[in-house]
Image (tube, rainbow, N blue to C red; front, side, top):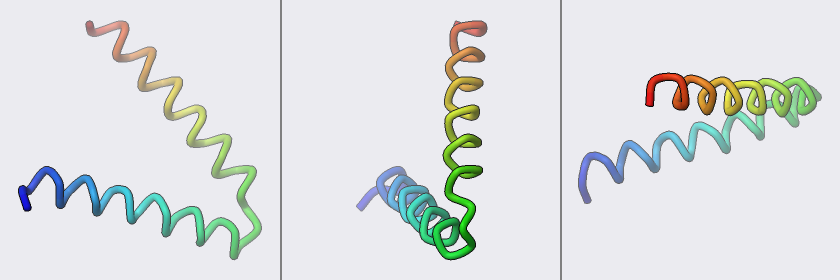
Length: 50
């Protein structure tokens, strides 16, 4: 298994664990909003520096 696949799996696992943690704490809405804002920011920066 390559390092990139291992790293990708670890990021995927961290995302899932963050979702589980948000459900436990009752902060799902805040997490969804932050993830949406982060994706929008990433896309905007990607277009800016393309």
